Image (cartoon, rainbow, N blue to C red):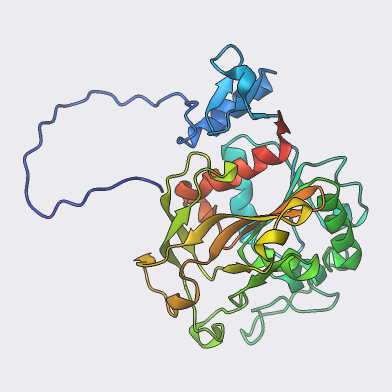
Length: 341
């Protein structure tokens, strides 16, 4: 949750006083506070101008250095993909968007397939879901996964709620990014653009591994642990984040950039936003095979044509509980709609 804690192993005396009432604080405009996104949303809803400086300072009209800002924010136009295959991760994503007052539209397979996405949206979010599930969903007449062998009466999905985005929807999603849109993908869903656009990245973990026995050849496995990450806090996606932070990982992904440095520029540029810590990775829980990911990229911003693909090798909004990494997602959304100055 991003709360700094000092552990005290010995008894100590504290000077305290009773407080009759603890009043809730108004949202701030300090980028280190998650509430700054609520304050920003409220200002934009009243047609007030909000800008970000190059260091992430949030500026409002009339404040100092307003004319020297780097980005002017706009009300985001966000789409959240919701498949016909039940995906609780999409529900957690929607909760975060609702909580921080980010306007968004739930889109389904047909919305992607008919195209025209860039004219409607600045950013599209894919919550964690396998490439196969996104592309194909449940086929007509197919049982839902995990229902076999339980002795239950099997209810088939209605035919109009079967299938996935298909090759046509994938092509429209790729066009959306090429034309300047931002695609944000979490964990398993990040495999889709890496493999099928494709992007100059190599995935180091099998995101389909559900048990230790199914772990990648490297033996890496994280069943749900808190990991240390190092953050490039100068990257706009990391505004408000400390250089050393924590991420919750259940499965997860790690990346190598496959471009030589002299080619990593322009419409193919890949920038690292955060990496797995290079030592003492595990903060809480347990993991196996950590050497496979030490110092590797866990969050990257990949240029693709005129747009961006933001790849989260973890779920920054996990169960609506990981408040310490919400800023990564919210920054990405606002940057996707911002006007560079």
